[in-house]
Length: 575
Image 1 (tube, rainbow, N blue to C red):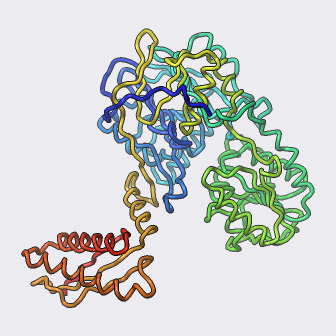
Image 2 (image 1 turned 135 degrees about the horizontal axis):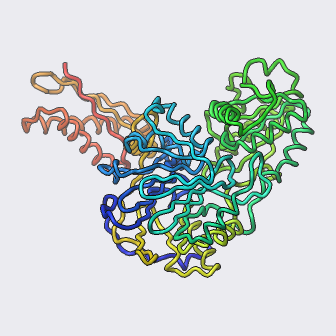
Image 3 (image 1 turned 60 degrees about the horizontal axis):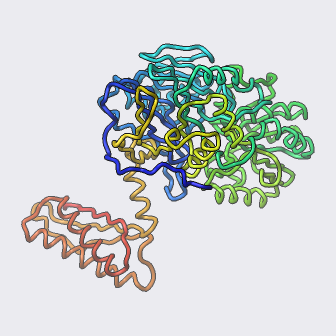
């Protein structure tokens, strides 16, 4: 993909969020160098409007880390200037960091459409903080005043219902943030995008558009959700045994299609996976999904008592997640379902980049159990929720913004989006390909330029139930252990004199085995004791100093002896 038109980056100074009170500034905290972690700030005279608080799923080399969230530490001390958090839709890469970041931001008012805000509430309920949040539902097309600006939510189509683009009417001009979108003329269970209002905004004048770039490298227009209905109909109708459909729990339009097909073929639908059950329940309560009473059920032991021909299971795990329903079915560890010969498994999704091997492993396990597995590689079983090049071009034709800011994607996707804008006649000074933390400043005459400052953004890792940011040390430790193993040095000393009672005990895992173990263990004991005794001779009595000395000595030893850097954990026990 050509990238010659990318703006040249000037050397930039890292800094906190800008403190200037006058003017319009736009800057991303995430989503401009990756797919995920979406978070964008519109700064109007120092008042802050944040669009989305999304998470990013980890890469393969992140060793069990749960996910990453945007770094908003630069806003510390300015929480009272945050006038609103605006959510475009209910996918986790746009709302998944809410429970971590809203407390950090002192719970500013939040706005979004009905289904989106229900999903935000669900995220907050998981941490028992929903009662502290200010969650506001906004209908499409209604302009609401928040501080100095008016905000308007516009209906767009995506792979989850109730998705929105957001128009921010500021004193400096209108900003349109498209959110994730495609132009689906035959969507499931909802109307097409609001072409008319987008065009009206274009005629009235739009200063800048921040637009989805995920599929900017793909030609043509993205397919409609209805285009996979015929394939699903045939597969489910022709299946003689049970049917297991795996997809994202947030693909509610896809799930609705499967439910309707199951109804036509007299199959009961069983939901597997907590997120699947919760999302479907919320969508049904709000009227975004319909099913006759008793057709859709939670997974239970009774599924095994029903004739195979009458059963359809919708499960999580389309990305090969080890703990999700589909993987456990393939391994034979699911509480209620064991895949067997005669089952038809349909993977109605594409593997996310980096998940290919995990998905292949699940598919192989399913085949070994005797199931017939159908994927999107061989049949039309999945369509994207992001617009291809023609969709992106149509959005720009409708909105006709003065400035184009490609967002939501990796750098090559943003570069492809920039090339599309050039094909429409935009000049380089109207196309702004930002990276996370870069600041775009607007002048009164409508021109824009990058600031010499740049906001500092780092990887904020969430692992388990730790606070945001505390996972970085965990990841560093795991990488060290995975590459060179771990060595535990147990030192027993007298509590008063601090002299060692005996030689240190050594326990290692993933570091030394076989013929080298005896020699290296002896040398490690000698090096550890020598480092400890030298500190003692200098009159040192602090436990931390002893640990630092032993750790340093062993790092130097392993670097010289084995060219490795294992994790060294010294433990001191006083007797």
